[in-house]
Length: 348
Image (cartoon, rainbow, N blue to C red; front, side, top):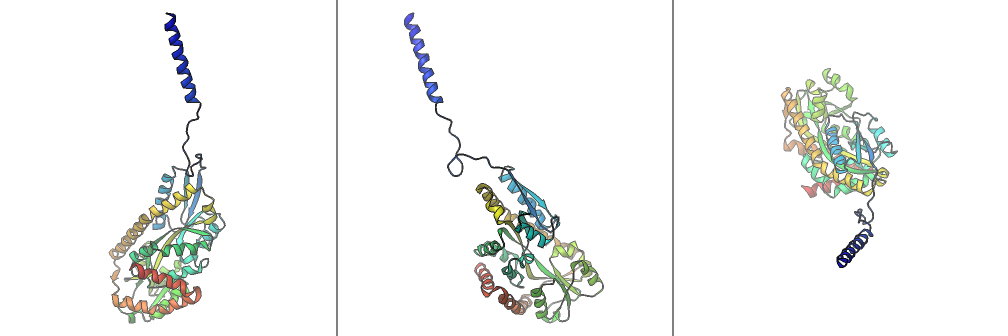
């Protein structure tokens, strides 16, 4: 009986010792990305602002981005969207981003030319024949050159999406180059755009956009040039008999973030932003394409006659644009102009 008692006590002692030995080593913690201890990252909120309407392709793409970023970050990165120029017009948005008062901004390249002169290459008319070519260029090595341009203004380019084209509408039909003669066309107050229409034989007439509808109604101008979506949204088609697929100026919609804001984010958050914008790029492109096609359909359905620009006329318009290319090359350098044309040749 005594022997059995000693055996039981010995087994209890052995079990106790093994339990103490197992508990003497701390539990292994998951390693962080750099192989060290995991670190709890602080949640951040980033502002995203633009002057375009909430229902525009930019607005729709921004909502998709917000959903992707917040899901990838498990809610640790929140995107607050400010559409409709709530935080100011394009110039105010650019300056706000440079001063770190706004984190992310979205707009076309045109308003940024005063801050990044090399972006004037996208004011060159008749450069892109179609939107798919523009998309291929933005997916080529040229995109790295574009990112370098933005860095000179303290911005990091996150995405560049070919949005749409400026198209011509008119009360005078245009089938050949001579038909441009004498047409008074409202343009932006952009010297490159105006020079292009002068080379075609038209009379460019800068007007505030808010004055355009009445100017068309009263016959002060015969024509205008804007994307299809703008034409239908502003009801300009009510005063226009013809619409042409001139595809003369491509709208490049961009998203950029203040470089210091980006660099001060944890590496994990930087990666999430990069991956999210890459993922949203195709979504944004399809949104723009669908909106453009839908708007053209609505314009035609409302009674405006569609004139398809012939290959011959398109080639003549491109030839007429050559002096504008020279103007831009003189101001920003031939190298910047050549880089874009070389990229287009490579993807075609």
